[in-house]
Image 1: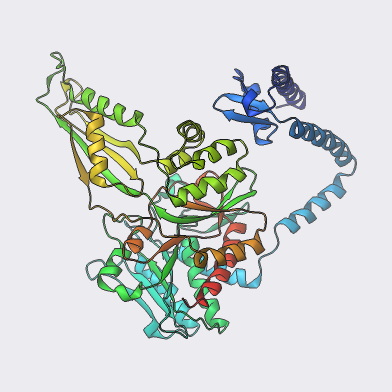
Image 2 (image 1 turned 90 degrees about the vertical axis):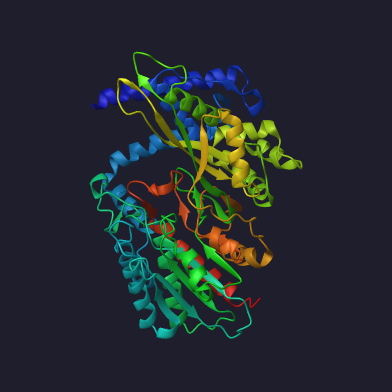
Length: 559
């Protein structure tokens, strides 16, 4: 694009922006109550609207309705004027500007500390050990991490790699740093070392080579869950090297099979065959980290207590079928489609528990556009339906936090293009809100579908379901203390996981399990379970420091 063409496009975008601003001012749309619809019909107008939304100069009150934040818009215009002056200065003193920019970059991305470099080598070794179900070996990864513990002085009796006899590659690392009070309940540091499959041909980089690029670490498992797993090993190494004397035992368990629990799960296996390795007063696990906005600013630090119950249901319908030239009214694909449409359109009842109520109460302070609805949602003993509807429409994760969700994820049927289908199956994936049962959810699906020809059966062994563990002062105080030092202006959000972790097994075994990492992630999820998985370098190093400090505080509680 030529400079002149770029200037024309910029001018057109500014014209579209002015038209939107004038429309908002003319309608006196300066508050959520006065919001008006904006529906830009051209790309440049849509780009202008998105830009103003990112800068909070225009705010969204609800879907399609917007209002003007005049003070912010005035600040945006002032900043633009300054930028124009700055561009002129840069054109005159380009060389000096480059030097300043280089110095600024050096300040915002400081060189890693020596201890961080040592940790990076450990992290790299774990990440680059393939632990997929198809080709990898958790046992090899566990052995490599075990070697790092014994190298700093842990007795061999306190460091074990345990694997089922019939699954020799699904090994788990368990180790203990003994405390001074044998009667004090132990602290368990839990993480899984298996990872989701990754096809190298689909990735921009080799998924099993750690790549540091543009402020990120890229690799399969870079975040889920080898970031926390490597931090736990590093923590145990540092505690031993520092001569740290805990009051309670500190146990580490790096397990295999969290991502493929229907095939094998290391936590379930350890609880059944080596329960002493996981015995603890409470556990720290994956499940929640820090939240970043689109510009990389810290929004909130999440602490997870409890999670929804995962359950798949298979829908199945059969009929005689026949030639496509003699169609039946009970076509199996049509019947299944109608059933899935009913499920897809249904919203399960609204629910709150102490954790999700605390979540939305705290979240309101970070979401000015939705604060009023979030406060209305939690003000009464039952959720405000109108506020819940607007919150659910604004963010799929918020919707999932408020209710059981069930969605179609797989469908298969038909055997020939010129024949009526004789057999159709579909999978419904449900994430069940704590306190509800699998049987109750199955009955609700049957009521929705309302077709006796469609059978509904559960898939796989049911997972245990338990209420969220309490977020007591003993659990929260170390988090508040360390987070207050590291990120003093960042609120702490109690959360319930809408996914599933190994915490469902440890909670059911009587070990209260909390998701806390201190690692701040991008709004898009960082590619976890998908392509080009990544974690910010800054986030990993900060999370390492955060977890090390809270472990030391927990370790001396003694009760």
